[in-house]
Image (cartoon, rainbow, N blue to C red; front, side):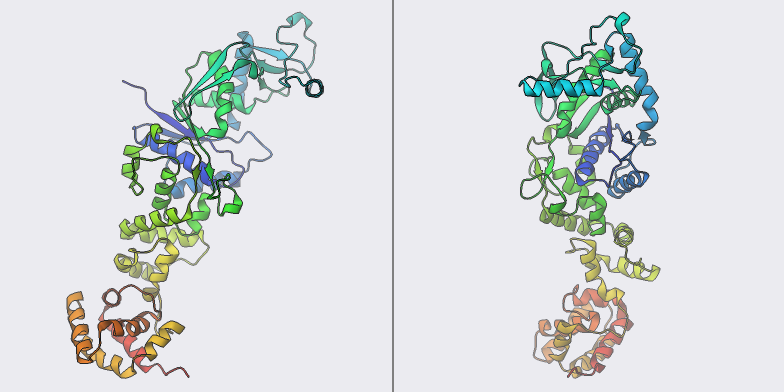
Length: 471
């Protein structure tokens, strides 16, 4: 039986969950979940000055909003420093690493001299082959013994085989002279101890893979499957940055995009399955594979995100949409819906979700059910009301009073009424929208009537008929 797939997402807690990080997390989640594997979370908090608990919280919240559940507890890299140091000391004991007594000043001087003479600035420590009898009683770093000839080949599932000449690799420091482990060592040890089988991450880490492979080889550990994915660019083809708009995953929640739409869009950003643009979570889990990831940077396109979001709202479960709408309001710092408002919106959801691309648009359409009498029509709606005499709304009321409150019956009453007035229903629709919602753009008149019910509909028509004309 093949081994279980284990992937991981390993963000540094120095800020929000970047949209690029969110996509990396999604790819790892899809790959593991689609194969019955495990998706782990590691917080790379070794940079004590820049890492904050607030940033960790923001990252976890962003992942939760996106629905990317992880297995087990998040691992803190900083808490494992002793284990990282233990591996460095083991390599030292095995002769695969050595003590380097060169000071920072000596290394800086070497580099300046090499630059001035046009030589490689790759530091070659004079201590690599020194006799331990010559070691001074002084602080030392532990450096790995890099291979000195030949090539290292990174077999990457996205980039293909990437070859690096070993004379381009220095004897990387594993443990600093103050005893703290370096990031490169920590990543390898953590991935090994967590059982990670596939490392799926941004291609800005591609060069790190060659250096990390030195540690795997020296320890005799199996190298994981590498998959370095291209970065995300803005519409102008430059690396995604603040000037392109929102960068944090949760900013998109606060803008009112549904999580399902965001997942679908991020999955399509750099990965494809034939020509499929719109798909469900179940399809994404079944289809996602590393072979579908392109080598070129993906371009972030807000219009595509809006389009997919609209499609996901349209097929969303009404109760689930109500729940997510509340979460959106909280994220956007807006007042929550009351129980009654929530019930009303859920009842109306069938006629709200069709063409809403975001939650603000859905709420805009829901205005007719959230607003309370007396309704104050906006300017456009006011004009529509003035285009029909109050008498017409008055005459319509008794006809509706006797209608059985179904769509067919209401359509019949309206058609007969329009015919009697020698007009088309289209001419009545504007004033009715204005009367029922106080605005010109709304769901269909019949949907509003059915959602509001007989009593509320008739009361609103009566209010509109009695509205004193604006002078």
